[in-house]
Image (cartoon, rainbow over all chains, first blue to last red):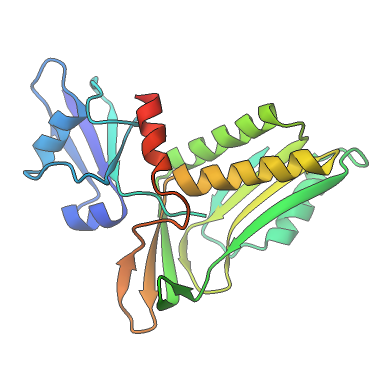
Length: 77
Length: 157
């Protein structure tokens, strides 16, 4: 299953890239599985997660073609 | 309702008047309440000379549009507009405009506060500041409650 992964702001700097295309072999992969595929470290506790541009958490199950985004707390306005 | 993100210098008062002429029926609203956020030359004890504002194209607009729709449903307002700057900017530049039109002031004050608070807490924007010493750093904490986006996350999970 192909999943697009995007990183923003300080996390993009830390990852050294703005996105990844990840192939996950598990039957019902979650956001946490995708993170494990892109990083050896655990998900930093302050990092927020969005799937298809909606906030969610690491236990959300994914389907093929989903876009997962990881980013730090927002600081707009 | 109008929501847009721009890299261009923002003139909030021109935007308010232009939209009012274009979209509001003349003589029906009793006022417009606006909030204009501008860039400071200091943050967290440091002097700041420039800033780059990053965002998540698509998600950012989507979340601002949603909060505007909620405001339209939640208060007796006629229309609202949000414009947010992204990219490079310098102190005194307007960063964000929220404008709300209504027949009576209370609803537009309340709706305007709701929109800007939600935006600060949850819309995906990130500030990267450059200090007067030339050091770049990401702002890791908003001046608002930093826990709200997490609560949004838990609620929608």
